[in-house]
Structure formats: C-alpha cells, structure tokens
Length: 123
Image 1 (cartoon, rainbow, N blue to C red):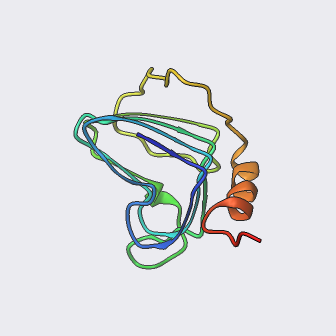
Image 2 (image 1 turned 45 degrees about the horizontal axis):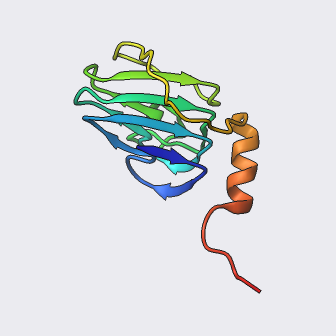
C-alpha cells in the first residue's frame, strides 16, 4: 500500500496508521498533533521516507515525538529522511517499491502537503 503526500492532523492514534501483513510505502506525509504515528506489527514491511512529524504528545499529554513509531518488534521497518528519530525494535527492511516516486525532504514534503492535500475549489 502506498501512503503519500497526505496531511494527518489532530489524530490521537495511528497516523499514518496501523500496519500489519503487507508492504507499506509511506512517504512525503505531514503528521501533526498526534499521539501515535506508525504502529508496526504482524510481519508488516514498512519503508518510511521524508515524513514530517510535529507537535506529538506522550500519554501524559506532554510534548514528545517519541510515539512516532509504536514498534512491536515483529515487523520490518526502515526510515530515510524523516525529521524525527525512531526507536525501532523490528529488523531493518531491505524492501524497496518497484515504481518511481518523487521523494522530497521532510520539510519540503510538509510544505507541499499543506499547499496541495485535500479538497480544492474548482473555478
């Protein structure tokens, strides 16, 4: 599954999502006001690239991006170029998608997503 160029805002849990049993290509997303980001479990294979995390909170509602990855240790995960560091338990994946992608920097992805994601008015 590809999850790209989205804005996830004001979500308490699992943005960009609970990932299990499949390959997940997750890149150029903006995630803010969150408690949990990725939940990696169930032999999922996750490649995260250039995702921008901001304004995370921990379980006591204190500012923290520590919840960007909730890793159960039974998936495969790799991040390249996101703006946070992840505490990873699962092995590092070597999987890469077989299609072309336009990977930005995390900061450029956030700017692009905020300008372009969501419904627009057609004139």
